Amino acid sequence: MECVLSREETAALYRRHIKMVYQICLMMMKNIPDAEDAAQNVFRKAMEQHKPFRDPEHEKAWLIVTARNECRDQLKHWWRTRRAGEEVLERLTWEQPADGELWDHILSLPEKYRMVLYLHYYQGYTALETAELMGRNPSTVRTWLVQARWKLKEILEVEEYGRG
Amino acid sequence: MDEDKLKGVFDQIKPTPEGEQAMLDRLLTMERRGRPMKKMKKLTAALAAAVLLLACAFTVATGLDQRLLALFSGGARDPGLIADGVVSIHHSRTYENGWTVELKQALVDRYSMAVLVDVTAPEGTALEGDDYFIRFSSVLTPEPEERGVGGWVSGSRLLEDDDPKDNRISFLWYRGPTSFLNAETQQFIGHSAELRPLWLGKNWVSGTLADFSQDKRTCTVELPGQDSGLEYQVGREIAVGEEGMTVEKLYISPISAAFQLTGQADDPRMWGPPGLAGVAETITLHMAAGEEVAMERSVSQSYDPVQGRGEFVFQPRQVIDPAQVTSITILGQTFSLEGLSPAEQ
Image (cartoon, rainbow over all chains, first blue to last red; front, top):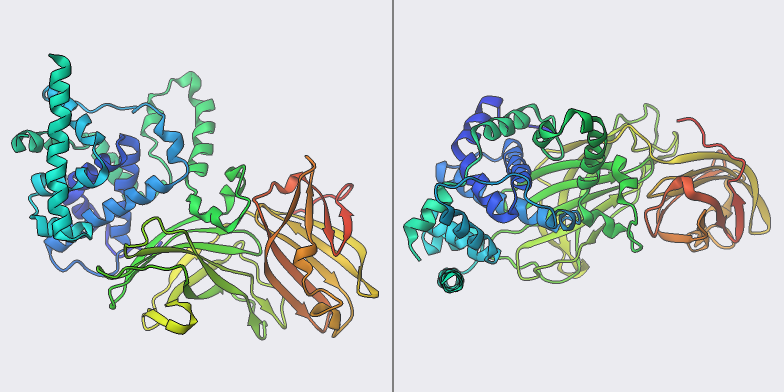
């Protein structure tokens, strides 16, 4: 396969964005081996990308969209059904146990909610920018943001009640 | 819901330093095409050899994008059969008109190639409907030196769209081998394919929706060197119309059934009734377990009028195990493979 970026450029791009790409892939794929596979494919695509990125924001946006598309493609594969039943082989470590629980709750949300929460609250994109990245209307994304927050709140309250 | 709490959780999601470095190393060496090997290190030495075999088999099987199987209405009971013919491409290009064409994977054997293609239109374009098609320029290299005029059949099949309102659609683009007037049919195995999208259309009335033809850059795909098919020298007579021809060779792979017939020079039976027109409907593969497999489509039919030799390639309705084929019926006549040995390749 023809590579457009040099090794040095690829390594630099990777260092700049691996954390973000990995976060998106793990959020989408829900397990580490698949997230690593997907993240690697995203950077491989970047290596083969013929059109230069216009600026750092374009570069970042391209990686977000590509990461999401890559994961969605991976999730269509027939063998995903095989992996779905597998235990996650490697666990994440958390500063506090409650963080891990919150992460589990985030993963239990539909994909669109996970993405809007991540892009808006963590990456700091506005609703308009998030809508552009997700290829949706801004009004739809605003609705998703509200619904995602409510959904998460609902889950957490049920959890709290269950513990009480 | 505390936003800081949410941020704090997301912030803890990151690869370990070792994992991060390992992914970069793999990326730079481009050495892996399947799953990371990291977990293998955790296996005990006693199990390593056995698990390694399993892991390799899994890597091959998981490399397959299931959408390639849309070629076969009967599906694949054992997708592992086509693993040797699956080529990862992952070549994406965005054109000046804002469209992106991504070549994902190819499924190849000696006589047939299918490429899985994702097309993304500019944002705001809804690709609705089921009558899109895509055209590619395709050159197989190296080409024979004295080849004369060559031709092949190609086409595309739009895959089921799980979100008809969005701007993405997927195709299987396929082509048969190149048949030359002055040379042997050019096979895919061991060659390279230079692919270039030409245009995307929506039915023949609307015409071209997106033109990529001005961009002359090609995607070179190295095709497999390993042929997963079996070839038999048959040498038996078959009645075609009122006279006989000879079935010279038979080739059966997981995705193709092909045979070579020799008749007379300028033999009119090669093309029309009462000869070989509609031969595809008469072909059945008989499997050892008693199952019968019909053909999905004709891939290629070529004829050398000087030699009086025709080559016919078909795609079965399902992925098959060539070793399990016991006989083939052509034009109502059954040829047993019992006692025939596959030719060395």
